[in-house]
Image 1 (spheres, rainbow, N blue to C red):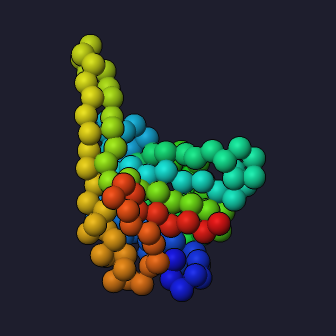
Image 2 (cartoon, rainbow, N blue to C red; image 1 turned 45 degrees about the horizontal axis):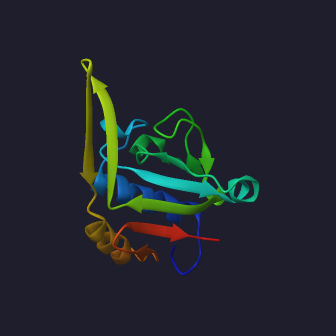
Length: 135
């Protein structure tokens, strides 16, 4: 992130910028204004799995990590985050009043990239994703 230093303060500011620009997420993509995926150093060493969910609510962004029971459902210490991905678009599916519905939501990661760069955050922007990779 900032000059390869990743402090709790940096992560708080990163999530604040992302959530304020893209919108608060939800655990269900069909109800979410935003979407992201992340993994931790421990998860990389176990099975290289990722979690996927909407961006945390502003109230979920704590001093040392994402809080328990919010959008992400469980706590994550900032010091454990190894890779954060925000896609340009995400698909959603839902059963609405007995009807199957699906859609695609776009996320303006170009503007998000500009806002993060203005705040001094190092990140990677491609045609598909915006990412912060620390491993």
